[in-house]
Image 1: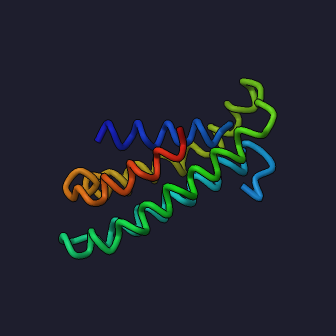
Image 2: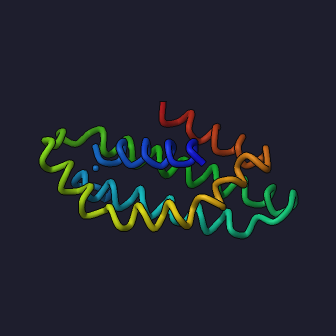
Length: 126
């Protein structure tokens, strides 16, 4: 559970740095949209066969996150006040996401094919 939270938080921080991303807020929105889509994909995983089918989708979503991070990295860095304002706007969405995602993100550990797909995608963020 803490790993899922750490991944989510890291991603939000990376995104908080801007997809059509023209601002950090756009980046955070795009990142949150992808993560919510990730939860939807994981909800359909019930066994090894469905995990195998979901792996490509997971990797594609991870690649989209890498694209978002690349776009955000090209933006001018916001000041601390702007980051705080964006975080405040997104706080309720992040809390709701964490509640919805916790059970689904555990499937990453349960099905190695999902974890491997996620790790391949995350390599693109390095």
